[in-house]
Amino acid sequence: MLKDLDKLMRLNRLPHIWCPGCGNGIIMKAIMEAINECGLDQNKTVVVSGIGCSSRASGYLNFDTLHTAHGRAITFATGVKLARPELNVFVVTGDGDGSAIGGNHLIHAARRNIDLNVIMFNNNIYGMTGGQYSPMTPQGKLATTSPYGNLERSFDICKLAEAAGATYVGRSTVYHVKLLESLIKNAIKNKGFSFVEAISLCPISYGRRNKLGDAPKMMAWLKEHAVNIKAAEKMEPEKLEGRFLIGEMQHKQAPEYTQLYDELIAKLQKGAGENGR
Ligand SMILES: Cc1ncc(C[n+]2csc(CCOP(=O)(O)OP(=O)(O)O)c2C)c(N)n1
Ligand code: SF4
Ligand SMILES: [Mg+2]
Image (cartoon, rainbow, N blue to C red):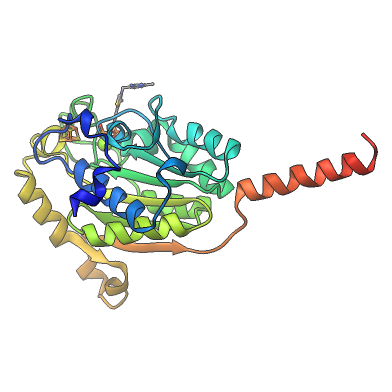
């Protein structure tokens, strides 16, 4: 299977920088599978990332790619999409990159319903810089910046994206790979702002400090604690305590921003022509 995907990777960039057991490669492969299965034109697909271990994925993917500044991937992607609306534009971002420094951009891109596919690699930590807590780090967990346990509450980034206006929202994990691929495929097909949270593993900067065991043990935790959103509807609330939902959280239609923008330009140009200007 990998053979088909070889062309979507810059093999000359290998070996990659990711630690053994890191979840980033699994998410990157799911993105490649989804792009392949949706038959996107490689020359019309752009991948934009910020800064972080996860954001290094843009360097390994064989498309036109932009490795931008920390927290600014969505702003660069917005510029690309506005200038060239016919392109398929992906954003690969981390939980720090996309929910902390870049959180505001996430809100407003979702609100505009601009046709971007944002894939957030959520490993619950700032992995690249050695393990500072992020807005996705659960309360009580240890980080270099919370050596006595994180005092802050984390929040549900999918609910934020949904409330801000994203027309497609889903969550999966690096254990539930087939679901992850299908969510990314649906995100690609959605004409509007799509957000997919991929719960990942950072055994080094997060797992080790919190004594969560090695990567297989962290995977097993994901398997045991994720509940499909459809199954959850039939479950007693007590059974859901301490667990999290995966699946499709939002799938709706709304006018897409670049289309509205182009229509406005056409209308103004027509008006100017009629007025002889
Ligand atoms: C403006 C700016 N602030 C801070 C940094 C340092 N920095 C680089 S990556 C990073 C956090 C990355 O965390 P996340 O986005 O979750 O990615 P991960 O490494 O966990 O995949 C930080 C704070 C930076 N490069 N630029
Ligand atoms: S520090 Fe964590 S997120 Fe970064 S490459 Fe290593 S395991 Fe992956
Ligand atoms: Mg992170």
